[in-house]
Image (cartoon, rainbow, N blue to C red; front, side, top):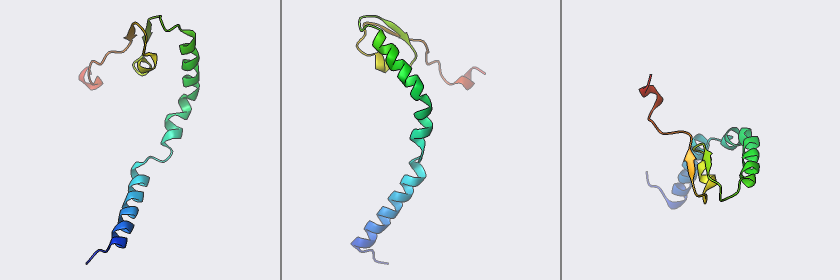
Length: 86
């Protein structure tokens, strides 16, 4: 079977669309970000109330958003997988 250019493009488009639909997690945004929208709004309000020269203690997922501060300490520590301790 000889593949010409148009057939290769069609097969590539079909496989790319299939991969996108299969691995793209349609609805990922709504299930991941929308439930935390209220938390994000409250975090931004709190972040604007805290002066930039003040040190903060924060959870790991908030630390990058506090960049530019003199000191940032994380509450969590990476001790390894939880099943290691059970």
